[in-house]
Amino acid sequence: MTASARWRTFRAHCATVRGQVRYALVARQLELHLPPSPALVVDVGGGAGHQAIQLARSGYQVTLLDPSQEMLGEARKALDAEEDAVRGRVELVEGVGEQARELLGAERFEVVLCHGVVMHVEDPASLNAALASLARPGAVISVLAKNRDALAMRAGLEGRWSDAIAALSSDCDVGGLGVPTRGDSVSDLFALFRRVSVEPVAWYGLRVFTDHLGDQAPGPDLPEILELEWEAGRRDPYRSVARLIHLVGKRKLTRVTDGAGRSSARSGPETDPWP
Ligand SMILES: C[S@@+](CC[C@H](N)C(=O)[O-])C[C@H]1O[C@@H](n2cnc3c(N)ncnc32)[C@H](O)[C@@H]1O
Image (tube, rainbow, N blue to C red):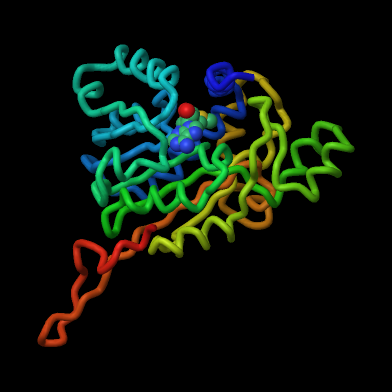
């Protein structure tokens, strides 16, 4: 499948129960962590702008960075349907996340989002370092990834027994976009956070009970599904077997001591923690 076809498939997925669970839960989880609007947000791999536009409607100033011209075109179309004020709060920039600092500037943003991207890149460490480099000290970083520790769940619940057995000892599977993508674990991603001075704050599971539903469209029971997924996604053991994991961290404030021994939060890092 070409990259364009893949991202078109992803857009169609957004309207399914699985897509709705993903967007509604991420939005609700983010509400617990974001600073009040207006604040500067960057959405790395922001795609067709679902998250970016939602945040711009709430008053945030959002930069959406994505390497796909097709996805940026979709985001532009979606923005055209918004009020001028919302449109004016979203900037679209073409480029890959790994070069985000060069493209957008270091330590600019109060919120750094990167949802559904890390599973597509070969080197999660360099993407993660780039995300941290965009963040001001104290900024919130939010990453949505595929849960390596529960890769066998989808195939198992769909009755694809041999795929499920294979998934038990793999860190990759072929997802809804028809290409193999990597799963990552909460502990590995939080370890990457710590390497670049980002403190883990919280993590959630998404699609505990709904990941085997394929392209099923939402019905009248959607509110109950969302409530069940919300509750399960923030408690053990359920969140551990979710298809997706949503990790939230905070870029550390650097403590400095002045000549009189007084300690204060510095507005920048002592040394760049990223390569
Ligand atoms: C599954 S979509 C997710 C879109 C959006 N974040 C969302 O949650 O709706 C993945 C997006 O990541 C983008 N992408 C792929 N590789 C990337 C990279 N190295 N850096 C930044 N974005 C990338 C793709 O163009 C695509 O728009």
